[in-house]
Every structure is written in structure tokens, then in C-alpha cells.
Amino acid sequence: RGYEGGGGGYDGGGGGYRGGYRGRGRGRGRRGPPEGPIDELKLYVGGLAWEVDDAALLDSFAAFGQCEAKVMTDKYSGRSRGFGFVSFTDIEACNAARDAMNGKEVQGRQITVNNARQRTYEPTEGGGGGGGYQGGGG
Image 1 (cartoon, rainbow, N blue to C red):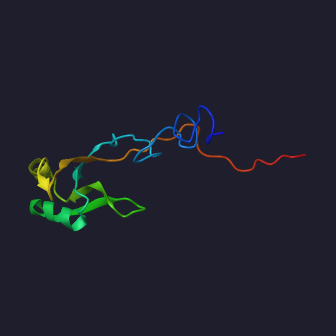
Image 2: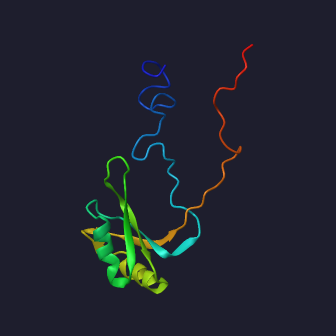
Image 3: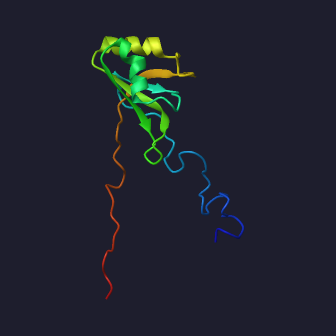
């Protein structure tokens, strides 16, 4: 099944080898941003150019107060994922940076700056894993 015949083909036509979903991020569930509580001291910075690293992001926000910056990278290629986070030690500095930097250009790209949301982890239904060899035989 899969390579030759009718419905579940290799081309992603429902059910075969490719499963029907193609493109970047395949298999990750495309859920969108977390819906947890807002983190008052951390900013999400989206729309970053691929060339922006931690130091460049920090330079862009350092004028607003003491902060730390981290650009998220792909764990396999090491390339930037196009977004990052900036953490401040002061709420007023964080709010000033958000208001001033949202919509600004950094290295030729217009960035989006919002307060980050904390991740929330929902318990899975069914209470956990299982699997393995169950024994029996006779």
C-alpha cells in the first residue's frame, strides 16, 4: 500500500506515507501562541531577520533598561526561527520597550513586540503512557 495504488498514495493524498500534511513544521501540531497568563517582565519579539542573534537583539532593547535577550533557534540546523524573547528586571522598562519597539525596523525587518505569555501544560487524557510487552502466552 502507499507507493502504487489508489487512495493512500505517496503524494500525501490522505493516509499514505506522507499523511496529508506537508510544509514547514510538519508534525508539530500548529497550535499558535500559548494562552497562559501574561508575563509582565518578558517580551515576545517576532518578525526578526535570520541574521539577528542574541547580541543584536540585546543591543536593540538595552537602551530601555537592564535586560537579557534570547533568539530561538532550530535545534537541528541552528538557524534562527525568526523570533525571540527579551526579559527585563523592571516592569516600567518592559512596558516602555514594548510601546517603543513594536512596529519598528530591526536589520531591515519590521518587528512585532508583545508581552510574552507563560506556557500552560494541560494534562493528557487517559493518565499517561503504557505500552510495552504485556506478557501472556501460554
